[in-house]
Image 1: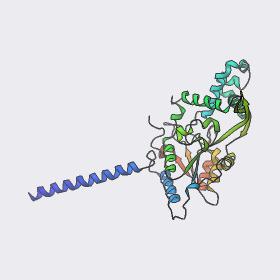
Image 2: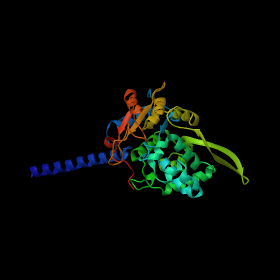
Image 3: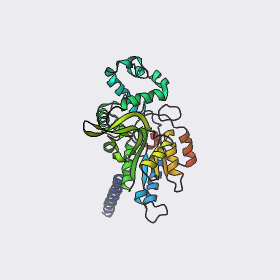
Image 4: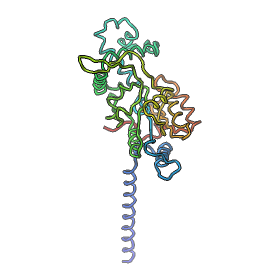
Amino acid sequence: MLAAYLVKVARVAVVSIATVLLGTVQALAQNDPLPSWNDTAPKAAIVAFVEKVTREGSTDFVAEPERIAVFDNDGTLWVEHPMYTQLAFVLDRVKAEAASHPEWKDTQPFKAVLESDMKTLAALGEKGLVELLMTTHSGMTAEEFQTIVTDWIATARDPRFKKPYTELVYQPMLELLAYLRANGFKTFIVSGGGIEFMRPWTEKVYGVPPEQVVGSSIKTQFEMKDGAPTLMRLPQVNFIDDKSGKPVGINEHIGRRPIAAFGNSDGDLEMLQWTTLGEKPGFGLIVHHTDAEREYAYDRNTEFGRLDTALDAAAVNQWTVVDMKADWKQIFPEK
C-alpha cells in the first residue's frame, strides 16, 4: 500500500512539474519578440543592444527621442532579386505607355525593354536606366504618380514566387521593426529607391509612415493647374539616396544621428559607418543572403545588392551579420 501511495505521489509530482515547465516554455514563446529568428548570435546581439540602451540608469541608456533606427529597403526588408522592384515597375510602365510612343520601337533604351532584351538593357548601363526612370516617373502630378504606384503594387506579381511584392517582405525584419518600436525606437526607411515610389505603401506593409521614409527623388515644381495647386514631377534628378548620399539624406530628413542601422549591401556601407563609428557607437547589422532554396544566395558577384566592401567592413567594425539560412526560421510571412 505504501509503495503504491508513493508511486501515485511521484506521478502527481512529475505531472505538476511538467505542467509548470510547459507553462513556462509557452510563456517564453509568447513573450519572444523575435519568434522567426533562430536562437543564434544575431538575435542575442539585437536583444542585448535593445536592453542596454533602454535600461534606465545604464551608462548606455539612450532617451526615447534619440532612439532612431534606419533600415534599407531592397534586400533588407524585402526581395531585391532578380531585379529591384522599382526597376520592374519602370519596365512595366514603359510597356504600358508604349502605344502612345510608337518611336520607342526603334529607340534605345525603350526598344530593349519592349523586346525584353535584358542583355542590351544591361549594356546601356546607368545612363539608360536613368532615362527610363525619368521618362516613366515624370510629366504628371505627385498625386497622379501616387495613384499609379498604388495600383501597380496591388496587382504586380514577382516572377518566381507569383505573389505580390508586398508579400515578399521578410518576416524576421517585420518582427524587428515591431520590437524596436515597442521599445521606444522611431523606425525610418533609408533607401536608394524612389521616395515617392515607397511612400504610398510603406505604412501598410512595414508600419513606417510616409514622413519616415527617406529615398531618392526627382525634382518637383509647384504649379496652378486648372485652378488647383499641384506639384508637377520633372524629368530631372533631385537627390540620390545611396552610398554616401544616405548619411546626407538622414541628416536632411531626420535631423538626428541613428543609433541602429540595418542594411544588406555596399550601398549601405556609409549609413552603417555614420551610425556606428561616431562618438556614441551604435548597432550595425547586415542581412547576408545565403538561402538559395527559400530566397536567394548572393553577395560579392551580383548586379543587384552587391555585398563586398561592406561585408569586409562588418568584420572590422564588429557589425552583426545575419546568415539568412542559419539565423532565420522563416523568410516570408505565412498567409
